[in-house]
Structure formats: structure tokens, C-alpha cells
Image (tube, rainbow, N blue to C red; front, side, top):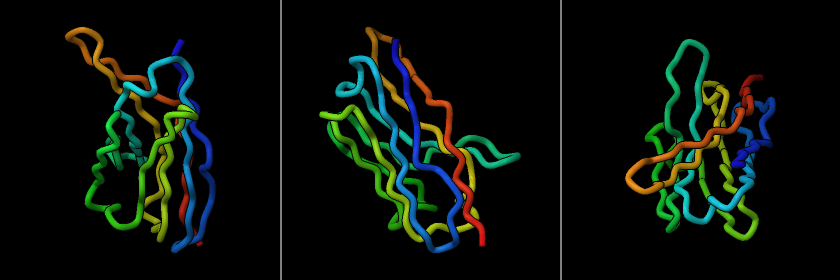
Length: 119
């Protein structure tokens, strides 16, 4: 059974940093594209950053230059380093794993971790 477990969220002051981690159980990690999404109250879930199985990355414009996504295939873990945090980064952050199975695309989600940026 595939499980995604996020950690590293919390309360941080504006300008501060946090690193989120997402540990993936099961044998899917190395062949999955991984992503971090976030959802703020009253808003839709949005893609923050993604990294393919080949380690190509892309970022939402709002976080470019501040956030960095990376993956460690030996540890089955994806990270999101968040620097220069702003109050508008406050949200629940979700880890996503996406892989192709035959002709279908299968998505797996973590339970989410709260990030609050406030003074």
C-alpha cells in the first residue's frame, strides 16, 4: 500500500524558512513524478512545485526564487525548501505522487501539513 507522509510544517515569521519532507512508502517513488501543492482557506488547491522522475523541476511563479524542490530516491523522500516566507504562503501543503499505470495516471496524496507565516 502506498503512503505519503508529510512533515516539517509549522509557524514561522515572515522572512523565515521551513523545509517540508514527504516520505513515500511502497515501491513507486523512483518512477513517480512528485509535487507539492497547497490550499489556503477559501481557495483552490494549487501546484507549488514539481519534480519529475528525471529530476526536472517547475515552480509556480509566486514561489520562484524562494522555494526549491528536490528528491532523494535512496530515501524515497521529496523535499520542499521554503525561504523568504510570506504571509500569503500560509496554507496546508500536500505532497503528491503521480505515475502512469498502463494508460492511466494514478495520483497519491499525503494528509497535508500546515504552514503558517505570521508575526
